[in-house]
Amino acid sequence: MVITYCLLVLGYTCVNIPYGTLCGAMTQDIDERAKINTSRSVAAMIAIGVLNIITVPLLSKFGSHSAKTGYLTVAVIYGCIFTACHFFCFAKTKEAVIIPEKEKISVKIQLKAVMQNRPYLLALAGQILFGFTLYGRNADILYYFTYVEGNASYYTTYSMCIIIPSIIGAACFQPLFRKLNNKGRTASLFALFTGISMLSMFFFNAKESPAIFYALSGLTQFFFSGFNTAIYAIIPDCVEYGEWKTGLRNDGFQYAFISLGNKIGMAVGTALLAGLLGKCGYIANQTQNATVLSIMKHAFTTIPGALWIVTAVVLFFYRLNKKRYNEIVEELKNGRKS
Image (cartoon, one colour):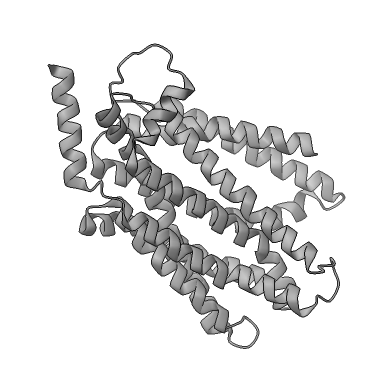
């Protein structure tokens, strides 16, 4: 199973990196890129919402005689849909940005170029914090509802309450960007309010104050979805800045490095949670001690909340606004013409 899972992650990464670089290759218009990333994020949130609703009924339908058969059948169905969608995407997508042909560039040279790309380094720091915070909290969610709230079924209600806010939050990235004209500042604002909403959840719970708890959950997801859209919309613009700064255009390398940063954050966040729970006496399917319960609650509310505010501070210093980006693109075009 470990080998299969590693192959799955490897295959997903191999698909996700070229898919992620498509936006930058389709257009250099910063507003069009914002629209593309908004559409992508909204579609993803809709798909996640649909999957959350239909997966359990499908498992019941195909796994009535064997849970193993049910999981395998549903995985095959989802895999076929995934493959068909990507074939359609890559067949119908046209790359409009002309990329200069160059010889193979060493990793060392590309790393050196990346180190000179300040907007990209800020985006990378944001991605590492994003991965640490998001996946660490996601790893804690079921523990939180099972042991802190005392009822794992609350997670189903929680999942239902965040579907619509996810979609709306993703759609709100573009209008907010039009007001601020800076994708980093837009991501920073979303991150700030994600953190504030998450910190507020510490004072409420699903059992005693369900209305406030689920309202804050929806609000948190709204701001998170806006951030999720903004942080990925930043990356293509950093490519133009890097090309202008160093003369090297390396879309794929930059996106791959972003993916690596996100996964490093994910690995550290989930490992720290597991290590802390184990060290403090977590025992599966048993009543947990007060320290373990406290860790679970803080890992769901205050710790990620504080880290979201740190993320907001980091991305506040992203200076590549719409005006400066357009100047850079114009300089690059003139340079190519001459």
